[in-house]
Image (cartoon, rainbow, N blue to C red; front, side, top):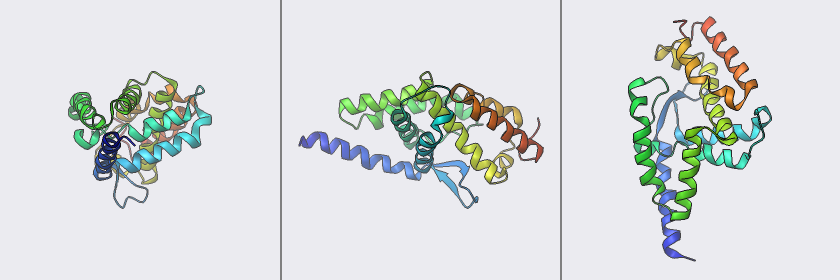
Length: 197
């Protein structure tokens, strides 16, 4: 065993435990509390495995699941940026890049490079794996919002155009899921959970 390598891996493993304390704006089903980033990542990874048949193109499922599991680790330092927070979104990339340097930098160089590469691939959204993982990242909170009668949308006074703008990239990963998403948005507009304008 390379003791120095092992200790770096353990340091990273303990550091990412902090992801369990980063709470998102989205509430879990039943609206009893907000979900944390670790729960969100686990949910996405399982969704990728279960819903892979709806992807526009074939992809490496394990790689997409790995992307889902690590994509929000940077929020340990950068914090969660709410999807409709325009001010927070303007600084998100810079904050998350700095966080990626520190957090992935805890690992041995080879693993740092692998995870950083997966993180950046997810962010760029140009590969089949990234496109489908990002589609799941869009679908998961909209499912929770819908299951909770739109309480999070109503709390933040979210309108239809904001939701469409946030969700439109889902079509790149799955045209079928994008069609379902549009139906879900329209249902919630009709029910008054999402503002028309």
